[in-house]
Length: 177
Image 1: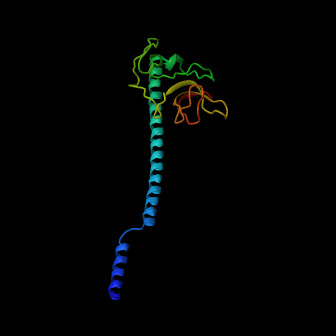
Image 2: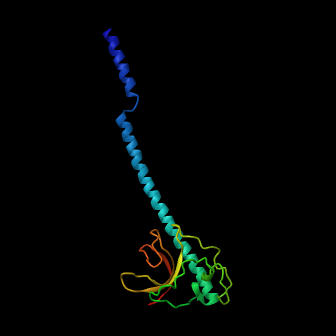
């Protein structure tokens, strides 16, 4: 009988060894959680990088459309004079590049030799904000004053319209030296 009890105990021990313990399961879940968080962080970084690339591409396309308007009408958006870069004046910015006064998609009738549309549509930037044209944008804020005419996006932080942020995405058209 003692021999049978020992064989029964050995069978019972084998039965318990076949599965995972609670601690082993918790360790596996913790490792999976850590790997998932690393993957999610990398995915977030990849999405943010893609948004920056898209915004740069959009700004470049708008700059090209503005150059076409300049070649035809000898004016920039908002009826700003070509090659005239201001030094901090306000009110000359164009915040809505799809408006007829911007001259890129339609005309307000005041552009001479307008033969657009120069771009099919002006979409919002990847963060949901409008692109802008500013003929007196300080491209070196804090360092000194270096003015340029630019097309841009206010970037991920969305700070804009008279308060430019440090993450703006701009494409200079002309820089005043």
